[in-house]
Amino acid sequence: MELTLDQVKQAAKREDFRAGVQMRLLMPRLSVRVTRWILSWSDVRPDQITVLSFAIGLAATACFMSANPILLLLGLLGFHLHVLLDYVDGEVARCRGTTSVAGAYFDLITDRVTFPLFIFCSGIGVFGQLGDPTILIVAFFATFGLYLDKFAVDCWYRANSGAVEVEDRYVEAPARSARGVWFGRAKLLAVMARGMTAFLTYTVIAGFLDAQWAFPLAAIGSFRAAVLWLFAPTMIAGAIARFLYVYYRGSIPRRQALL
Image 1: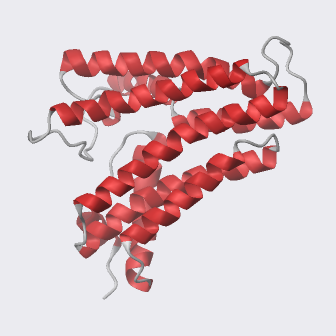
Image 2: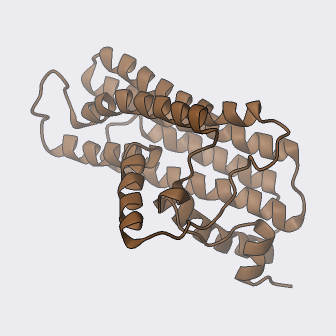
Image 3: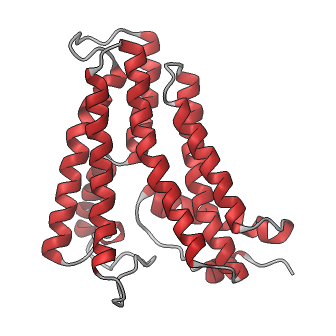
C-alpha cells in the first residue's frame, strides 16, 4: 500500500519545523517526498542509498579540483544531492524498520569523509590555478576548522554516551516576539554565512568571476583563493565559539532556537 506523505513523515520521524535554510528547512521537506517514492516504487535498501550518496559526494569533491566553473557548478549540485540522499537513507530505514547501529555508523562516516574533502579539493583547485603552495596551507587550516567544528559536537555526544535527552531532535522553534524572531534570523544568517553550503556556493560564484575577470589583489591571486583565505580563520573561529558555547552552556546550539 502506498503511504501518504504524513505517514512517511511520522514513520521517518521527520516533522515540519523552522530552522536552517538547507539542512533544516529545505532537505527534510524534500527528502520525505523522495523517500515516499522509493517506498512505493523501489526495493532499494538503505545501505545502497548510502553507498550511492557517498559515490556522488566523492565525485562532487573531485569537481572542485577543477578551474572550470561549469564543473564547479556540477560539484555544488552533487553536494546537494549527496546531502539529500544522506537524509533519505535513514528515512527509508526507519520507515521499513531496518535501522541498525552499523547502518547509522556507516552513514555518519561518509559525511566525515566528504565534507572535509570538499574544502581541501577546492584548495587543490586553487593551487592548480595559481601554482602557489601557500594556498594548500590555507586549505589545510580551513579543513582543520571544519574538523574542529564537527568534533565540538561529536565529542559532546561521546562525553554524554548513555545519557537521555542528548539527541538532536527535530523540533519547532520556540514562540517569541516579532522582534525576537528577526533578531534570531539575523543570528542564524551569521551562522549560515560560514557553513559548508555557503563556502561551496561562494566558491562556485568565485569560479565564474575568475573566468571573467582578474582578481584585483595580486597577493591573493583569485576570487576562489579569496574565499579560502576568508574561510580558513572563520571556520576555526566558529569551531572555537561552538566549543565554548557547548562547554559553558552544557548543550548543543540548535539552529531552530534562533528562529
